[in-house]
Length: 388
Ligand SMILES: Cc1cc2nc3c(=O)[nH]c(=O)nc-3n(C[C@H](O)[C@H](O)[C@H](O)COP(=O)(O)OP(=O)(O)OC[C@H]3O[C@@H](n4cnc5c(N)ncnc54)[C@H](O)[C@@H]3O)c2cc1C
Image 1 (spheres, rainbow, N blue to C red):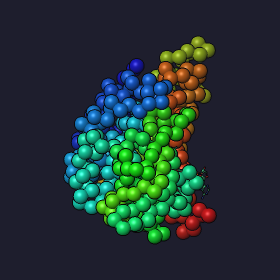
Image 2 (image 1 turned 135 degrees about the horizontal axis):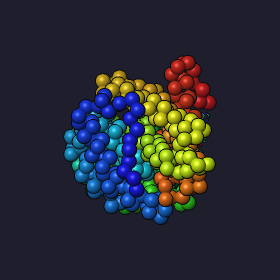
Image 3 (image 1 turned 120 degrees about the vertical axis):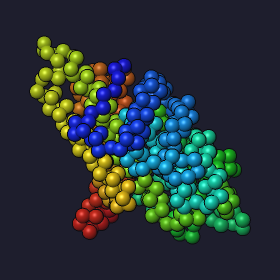
């Protein structure tokens, strides 16, 4: 496999700090050396590369934007660059790290008790404990406020009932952050693996994110101690705050996927001869490559400015939605164009583009579908909610 050449058409590198570049390069090398040689095998087998959890933890990627508890405490741009590089390898790997950090460690850090933080965050940063985030239900995805999961207080316990669907890391997880209504209000609960009444099983037959675990969680009269409720997580807005963290990472991550696809398509187009000259020397194909390069560059700049706003505490959830929406669209289109440029070769896993093409369909849908982010930005711009 040829070494990865990252497109940086507008010298965005020069806008990064030395520390940000160092973090980016470290993860880039890790992906080239550890992820690329094994990812197609896992994708084909439909298995998550568990053997990468320890090295990912050693590199400080788990909960990397959080302060204390053994976390790296990186700024938003360095965090985003980690996501970009991981997703250059595979969206499933980036999903694992996003969920662990943005959707499990973040809510424990932001809304948990001191005991919960001490108990869970250090082993999660070390990759010794894995978490998942259970919000979506079989009948409530885009509209999680309609959830049916319920928690009831009974003496010294909460008793949970409900089903969660499409949960990343579900069967891997030692602890699930489960969202359920308690007296009509959405609350977050920590449910440990092995608790009677809790079970998890994987969704089978996925075309997409095959190197990632996606599961259904079932809670049947599942009793947990009172201290397993996240005391600060009250109302749907707290669950949505977690999604905002993770969507920020997705906006960066999918640009990594597009960069991988662009690199592969450009290399292929330069070397494959059709009608006596390279694919890249034909106008029609140049148009595709130029579109990809332009949109990737715009996506990179969007992320960087969003990161700088986040650093200054000024990024709004609607700006995060715009970046997630735009960059997923760009990555999806780039994967389609890249696949086209590779011709028949693009449909085999000898090349990466087909895997990215399939993966991006999940990323386009999860953490708020493309449509939902349009509605969020639309409401912000017009003042009119058009959800229902
Ligand atoms: C691989 C994978 C991993 C995931 N991981 C997690 C996880 O870890 N935790 C978790 O909680 N969830 C997870 N999800 C679930 C994901 O967040 C949901 O799939 C997503 O929110 C969409 O919900 P849905 O699939 O039920 O689609 P639906 O909500 O049923 O939407 C169906 C269609 O209707 C459109 N639509 C919805 N509302 C509107 C509207 N108001 N106006 C116009 N159109 C609308 C949608 O855009 C979509 O095209 C994951 C999903 C996948 C595929």
